[in-house]
Image (cartoon, rainbow, N blue to C red):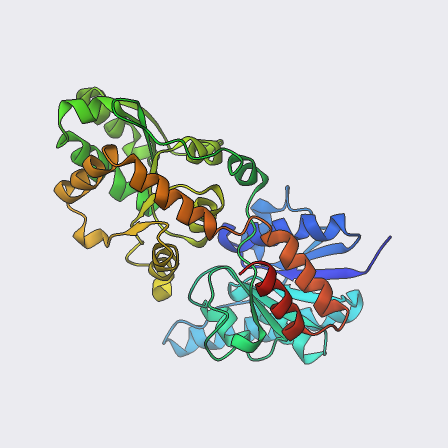
Length: 378
């Protein structure tokens, strides 16, 4: 049964596209057609995105002070807005959902201007610039870590959480198993290209400062950039530490599930996955993140007792070594942290988000939906 078209709008980066993809699968299972509107950068995700059709609409960000560049950006936005209006008039979607990134601006301006029920999903604890610009116009906002009890848009913000991949839900079924006494201790380290670069130097240097007995227990999984990989492998070999080092791990969710401790950046997807799986972590927010969203995401998990947060500028090899040394002899503390992280997890985020879209499409009350959801998933 075809319940109509839901139009999803997402910027061309994975952080915006992956939550949209999870929602798309859920909506299609419920009988909706799903169309995606994005920019040309997202074409690399098109092969696996479960859309009935993908539409590329021009957009631009206005970050330059150069008047010619600003004029070009405004022309692109105007062109994109006109194209989005034509597309929405033709498709007649029952709802439009924006996932952030500047490519969402023309379709959401068009949908709200045409009176189509529209909402946003914000992954982070701090609203991104595109979503901030659109927040006043939409009927509802779904938040990954966005506070729903305060702020200008609290009355229409629902704490749905961030949808996570099926592999993460599978890893969440594995209970945390503390490493006692002399048992092997599995350490997982990752964090995107910039995070990986910092950790490639910092982690081996910290492990080098551990005593032989503690170091011998470690088994490390570490993401490293291709250009750093050989150096990291050599550093661990010299230390006699068992390590699996690679630029990419296809089974990272499974590795997190097997970990005794995770050291990572604190992007929204990472923090969501750590909380759903329920693993203790040391989060090092990327210091140059726009709007400091990583620091806010990390603070949300740390505030619930589910992680430790340390600024990169304060993380010397000695300090990191002390953190590892304590972790190796405090299995009970790590187990408590793991349980606190898991208590904040939202494994049903994709389903809740789809419920919210359906409520919007059917003209239901978002205020009533918010009460119901926050009662069920406090």
